[in-house]
Image 1 (tube, rainbow, N blue to C red):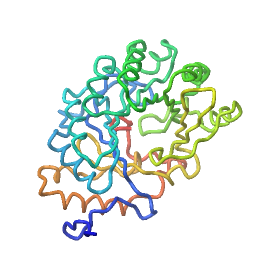
Image 2: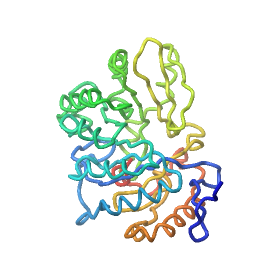
Image 3: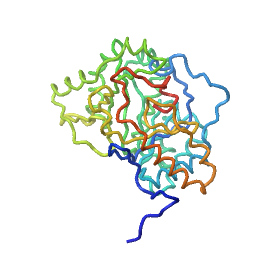
Image 4: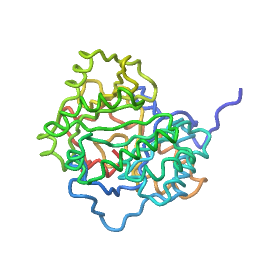
Length: 337
């Protein structure tokens, strides 16, 4: 058997930190622009900080190539709202051309999904998460600032018809807002084969008051599901920190993401790169490390890989959210959520 290729002093091996966690999942932001005004993320809407300069197709190709060589098998294209990029389909097609990437996913507010679901599927997109924080159109409008509930729901139908292997719905748990929606969500997934994911609200630098007013612990939802006969599924390598539940009477599943739960970070398997090319080892805690200077040519691949390995040795064991530390993240759209 031949030895793995060596570039400089680095063997092209899977990214791993000092705590034995391996990272095969990249969340790659392609824009921080968003056309929604969700209260927990961009309550005042998107305001550019100067003229944005997001990763180009060429830089994305170099980034994807480097991460694929160090074991990345799943790439999720994020934002902001990633589908606002005019070359979004080209980005998906570019990633699909890399045989080492097994799964291409995106997270979207669903604004362009109705018209483009089939096009994106044909380009290679296979998994899609759509943010739907309420099934009540009035509450949807209150949370998102956009009266687009019916359009988003038609987009979800289009995704199911296009043949996506997994359609997930993301809903941020919000006390005194959508916390009464659980029966509606359960009724929906009883006969609809989607994964519903409830995400516990996380505090960010600009969202302290919102967090204090609307934080709802995911543990309360977990205990309610168990009481109603839902069973915890065996963890899959793609699940990361999510806890997934299934019920014999329901076609859909429920996932809980509870960042304040004990040992939440123990199964971390993902890294993030911002739309301006900064590597983030965690959604919180640090400023990010610039990679863009090494995304200009394939001849820089060895140095880029070496920088990735070096940074992984600096990753902390936890995000420290449970200690009230929110790090430098001002809002989730800035590095892809």
